Amino acid sequence: MQHSSPLKAPLHMARVAGFTYLLIAVFGAFAIAYVPSQIIVPGDAQATFARLQTRTGLFQAGIFADVVVILAEIVLTAILYALLRPVDAVRSLIAAMARYAMVLVMAVNLMINVTAFMMANGQLAGTPETVLALFEVHAMGVYLWGVLFGMHLLVLGALVCRSGYLPRLLGGLMFVGAFGYLIEGLTRIMALELPGLPWVVIGLLSLVTFGELAFALWLLVRGISTAQWDRRQAPLQA
Image (cartoon, rainbow, N blue to C red):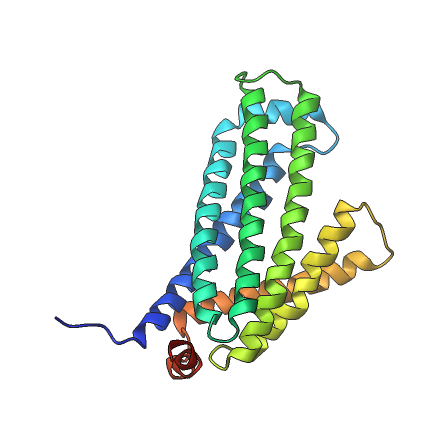
């Protein structure tokens, strides 16, 4: 019986992680940005309710995309933990727990959207004002998971920088850009308005978005330096 080289395992995991990362980016952008922009009319409960009733197919597609993202996040988090555990097992676990906590908030947010949808199609009793309020709670949920995601990226970026088998530059971009998620999430949840801060957040989020997409493509195309990963992994197997 032939066995695959142990060095191929981390390379395969890296490429699966890269593909999963890009899958999350596509489905996440559709579910989090596009669908709400086509359904929700800020401050207008009646118009929002009417759109939800007439664009059910689009909203259902958004729910499906959310489910895909949640499932993909579970897979990606486990792979990232395994890939970065040789660098620092405790910090890798912290990064994984922060991302899994984010997934839990995403799941709760999904149920909020489902509840609003059930009200719109008559399965549950609810007024247009209640539906709009649910969407507003959902928006706060996005900022909450953004804080958790920021914590994840902060630790992930540091681990990537220290790894020796992944690009230090991309780790640095994720580490610095993580503050964009942290600052935006905290200020939104706490209803704080600070002059000039939105521009800082936009800059940081631009950095982290570029860093994440580049990281995903690197994992998919280049993978990792298996020789360096094996040197890091060796003490764990001793």
